[in-house]
Amino acid sequence: MTNITFKQLRYFESLARHTHFGRAADACAISQPALSMQIKELEDELGTTLIERGARQIRLTNFGEAFALRVRDILRSVDELGELARASQDGLVGRLRIGIIPTIAPYLLPTIIGKLNHVYKDLDIHVRETLTPKLIQELADGRIDTAIVALPVSEPSFTEVALFEENFMLVRSSKDANKPVPESELLHEMRLLLLEEGHCFRDQALSFCGVPSARPWEGLDGSSLSTLVQMVGVGLGVTLLPEMAVAVETRSASVSVASFKEPQPSRTIGMIWRKTSPLAAQLLRLSELIGQSAIVLRNEHEQASRN
Image (cartoon, rainbow, N blue to C red):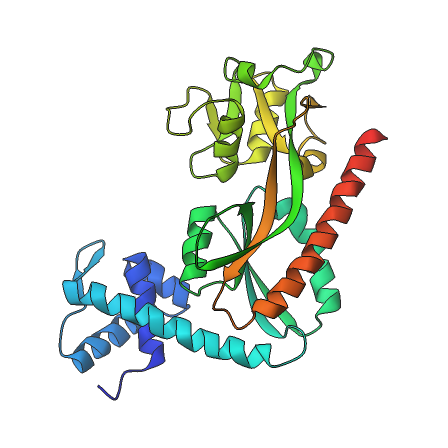
C-alpha cells in the first residue's frame, strides 16, 4: 500500500463526512468524477471496498468506518505538523481557521478581523460560522484551529479561555416600553420567541425562564436573531437578545429594550482549542487580543445606549 496519497485520504475523509459524492466534491473543490476516481483508486490500492454506493447516498462499509477513524487521526497529525512549524515562528502566520457561533459572529467579527489583520500582517484568516455542536466536532477533527463559543463546553480535550461576559436583554414592542420588566418565571407564560433548536442561546434563554430545554416549545422558533426582533416589532411576542446584538438588530425595528433585575441573565463567551495544538501559546495570546477588543466594543455599545 505504498501508493496511497494524502490527497486520497483527504478526499475519502470528506466523502465519509458528507456521505454524498456531490457535497464531498464541492467541499474538496474538485469535480465529482475526479473524486469518484480517486476513491476507486484508493479502494484498489487497499484491496477492499470502503463504501456502498447507493442511488442518492453512500454508506461506509464496516472496514470503511474503521478506516475513516484512522484516516482522521492521520490527517489531524499531518495538520499539526504544519501547526508545529508555524508555532516555531514569532506571532501567527499562514492560515488560521476560526469557528464562531451565529449569535456572536455578526457583532464581533468586524471588529476582531480588522484588529487581527492589523496586528498579524501575514495571517490568512478563514472563518467558519455554525452551531456549537458542529464547531466542537470540527475542532476535534482538526478541521478548524479554534472556535469562539459560549462557555462551558466541558470537553476534556479542549482548552477553554473566557473572553467576556454579556447580559441578556428583553426586547418587546415599543408600545410596551413603559411596562414593568417581567420576572423571569413569567416569561414562559408570554409569547416568547426563540431561536430554533440547536442554538445554545435558545437553551440559555429557556433555562433563564425555568423551562427545561428538552420540553417541546409552544412559542415561535426563528432561524436568526434578526427574524426574532422583526417579529417582536410587529407585535408577535417578546424575545431575548445578547447584549452585543442589540445595537445592530434593533435599529430598524419598532421595539424597546430593557434590562432584567439583578441578578441579570448572562453568558460567557470564550475561545476553545485542542490541548494538543502546537499553536496553543499563540492562541492564548490571540484570545487576549480578542477579549480586549470585545470589551472595548461592548463598552461602546453601552455608552451608545445611554445617549
